[in-house]
Image 1 (cartoon, rainbow, N blue to C red):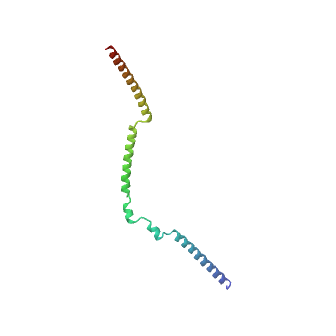
Image 2 (cartoon, rainbow, N blue to C red):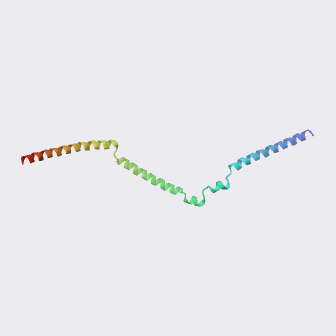
Image 3 (cartoon, one colour):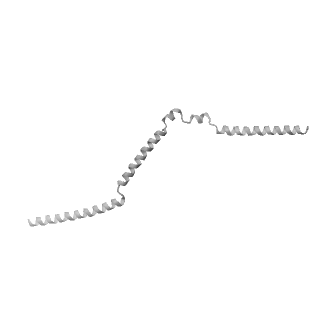
Length: 117
């Protein structure tokens, strides 16, 4: 029985030592994870929070963005494409050439009338 007591005492002391070491390690880990006063000072204050948007503000903004998106889609549908512009340019060039031809014919007639006079 006298042999068991020292072993029990050693076991108990070892258990206590391991427990204290574990608790110390956990305390160090917790200390590393905790915020300091400096950390807390950098966080938002009550006045900062008052200036932040609420869910209602964001919902209203979301509705406005959706409306604007719809307007942009409508405008996009009304806009001419590059191919539309290219076709228009070709038609205009043909029209300009025709007008130039008409002007030249008028000038020739005016010249012939002037010669006749």
